[in-house]
Length: 315
Image 1 (tube, rainbow, N blue to C red):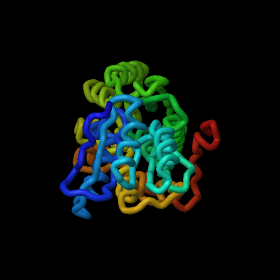
Image 2 (cartoon, helix red, strand yellow; image 1 turned 60 degrees about the horizontal axis):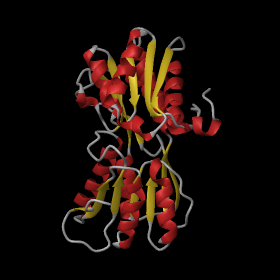
Image 3 (cartoon, rainbow, N blue to C red; image 1 turned 120 degrees about the horizontal axis):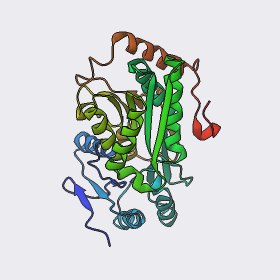
């Protein structure tokens, strides 16, 4: 059974709704970015929205169906695991607009937001290689799926672009959705990589990344955050964060669903590396200049970054 569906705000008629993935809206990463987008929409419009944080897989479809029955629109699913539930409920409610982030649902009432994560990962890979003293950089992903290997592939390419002699050590946390919510396992994997000489680790693993980042900070090594700006979690020990503007996708969907696929990358300003007072001393002007030159080349099409999900390999 579902717990009560939360209304964020007051007053209601056809309100939008957001369904967060496992980890919840306070995960300091992917879900939080979605929450911040919903909150930004509420501040901008003065209108309320529905929200629900799932506790298990069965609740994905239950929440989507309950929102549709209550007249919510649009209904936005956060994360690829919600694809099947959004597809099923969208078919049953063809007049209700839906949206999903990180997956494609090919229906006339669904907008699918996908990101070119390999582009943003390329930039932070460059920063990792330039910051590394050992010429060994690490990557710890969450669930071993093509989407996460897309992050890894972009990261590897960026690291090699900055330092042809760099070595990338990688690991995935697991093969089930539990891989996204296991900080203890993340810390173990980070420690294993650091034992091999890795001194910068990209944590693309949901709340598992919190354990990775804690372990690197404890060892006085560097980590790279993901999705949201996580620089402030361990000031001085987070090199940067690969920011993925899930917030913009949610705001856009709340403003009105445009059925079809919406692809977002560097050109659209939907991916970036985070700079603030927490990491300013870690990224030198020279490092930033090289990364900005690469960004311009990627946007202009002069620099091609392999998309693992298209090539099914990393070149």
